[in-house]
Amino acid sequence: MELKDRERLRYLAAKQLETANSEKNLERVELWKRHNMCKGERPVIHIEVDTFAHEAINPLLQCEDGFARGLEYRLLHNMINLETFDDDRVVAPFFKTGYHSHFTLFGHNIKRSIVKKADGTEMGHTFDHIIDDLGDDFDKILTPSQFGVDKEGTAKYVDAVSDIFGDILPVKLATDCLYAVPTQKVVHMMGMENMLYAMYDYPDEFKEMMDRIANDYIAYFKLLEKEGVLMQNHGFESVGQGTWAFYDEPIKEGAVKTTDIWGFMDSQETVGISPDMFREFIFPYYKRIAETYGRLSYGCCEPVDTFWEDIKTLPNLKKVSISPWCNEEFMASELKGSGIIYHRKPSPNFLGVGEKLDEEAFRAHIEKTLKTAKGCNVEITQRDVYTVNNDINKVKRYVEIIRESIENCW
Image 1: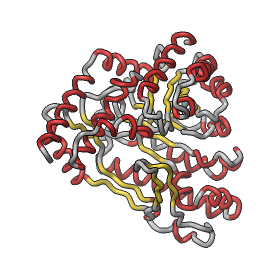
Image 2: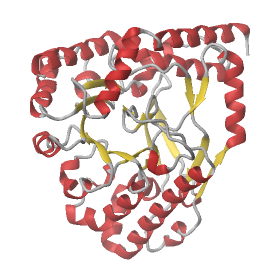
Image 3: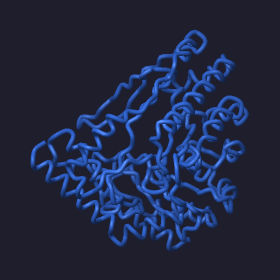
Image 4: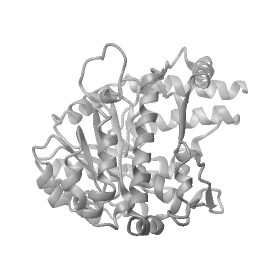
C-alpha cells in the first residue's frame, strides 16, 4: 500500500472519531435509544445511500490500492449521512466489522448475470435458476447446505485494518442482525413464476423445501452461537432493512445467544398469493426462524397488511416495514400502542426520478404519513433510490422537508 493511501485512511479514521464524538452525533445516539424503546419524541430519519453511492461516495475516492479503496469507501460511507445529508444516521467511535461467515443454501452457488450501463454502474441483474420443475429437480434441495465461520480470516482482516489506523480509530468486531429471507432464496433458485406454480403443483414438496430452509437457517445461527462469535447488538449494529439496533439494556454476562439479539426477515416474493396460502406454505417456517431471535424487524417492500393477521403473531416483533404499497391507515390503527415501530419506507420516486425535487408533492406524501401514523412510534427510511441525478444537495433538501413536516405535523 502506498504511503499516500495510508495517510488518506488515517485522516478519514481521525475524522470519523471526531465526528462520532461531536455533540450532534451523541445527541442522536440517545435519540435512537429512546426511539427503539418506543420513548422517542419524534420520528427518526435515515437515507440509505448504498444504491446511489456511485454518485455520492465513489467520486470522493482517492486511494489506488484495492484494499485501501475498500476501507476508504467504508469510512466515507460511515460519515456521509451525518455530514452531508444531516439525517439521523449516527457515526460509531470505532470501525465496525463482523466475523466472516457464509451460508450457501443446499450447497448451490446461484450465478448472477449483471447488466451494466456505459459508465460501469450496475443497471440490473438476473439469476441463473437451477430448478425448472420442483418435482423433476427435487433432488437439488436434498443436498446439504454449507455454512461456517472463518475466525482465522476475520482475525487477519482485523489485524490488517488495525495496522493501518487502529491506533486512531479502534477496530471492533460486532454482530449485525441475523438475516433470513427464505422466499428470496427460493426465487433465486427457481424464479418467481415457477415458485408460485410449485405451491399448486407440488404442495408437499414445496413444504418440505421450506422446512429444510428453516432448519438450515436455524442450524447456521446455532453454529454461530456455538462458535462464540455472536455479540450483543444494541448499538451501532445494522438491522435490515435500513435501521439500527440501539436498545437501552445492560451488558449481558456470559455467552451471547441468538435469543439475545436482533433478527430480520421479509417475504417480498409472496405478494402474489392469498393470505390462506401464506398461512399454509410460508408462515409456519418463518415463525420457527423468528423464534430464534431476541428482537425482530420484519418486512421490506411487500405490503405487510395483507398478511398482518399472521405477521403480528411473530415472537418479539419490534419493527414492521410500511412500504409504499402498504395500507398506511390500517397499519397505523394496528400499531398504535402496540410497542411495534411503524417503519415507513416512502416512495423512492420523489428523490430518484427527475432532475428536480417536486417539493410540494413530496411534502404532501410525507405529511400524509405523519398525520396517519400520529400516535405510533414512527421511523422513516428512504430506500431504493438508484440515482439522484448527481445532485447531492437534492438529498439534503429532501431531509430538510421531512424535518419541516415533522415540525408541522408531529
